Image (cartoon, rainbow, N blue to C red):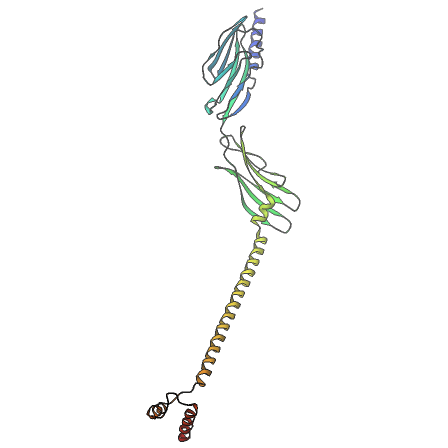
Length: 307
């Protein structure tokens, strides 16, 4: 009889360990958010003696209920709202320090755990950034080396694209950061996506791989751009030189034409000698204006004398 009692005690202890080893339900909440923890194994209509909600080992709610009467629950935290009908507890404005194990137990003739949650409070993730390290282009393909990063954490991958499809080398498995966040770079349709996420938020940086191939360009494309750039620069220089040469020629022609006109005018000018002017002054019978015949006669006389 004693042996049977011992075996029965061992069975009860083993059963309790199995029940206690049941994994807690995971719950993830963003910092500043609320969480609602249900008691799914207790019907509010059934009789009970005492229900306690605990955070780790600290009592949060103590509620005594008995057949035909209910007492007012004792709530230790002002952020907690307790619903007596089904023993559900709501916690508001959670902080990271609120992360931990929350349990609800029914106490009476038999102690029974009626709810257990593992609550994790997380901050929103920081922005993700997708950068292109190098691009190699050919007439039929494009190879991109991309890096997905956030703060000190980063993960790299190579994307190979042809005219129809793209494939990826590396980066398919997420990188778990020291904060427990996930960093992942992957392909989706025509896009390369850098994603930073946790259980409560996510942010990503997305680029079109064809746009990256065209925008950054490979060695062949860069060489083509350089050729066209050099050709354009040479053409512009030639046009400027031609314009300058034309301007120089026009200026020289204008100067030569002006000099020629001035020379002809100088040759056709008639100069009156000082002797003739004196003769006109000394001749009392002469008028103020000398006749053309007098001037021409005098000039002819002086030239004949010289010869």
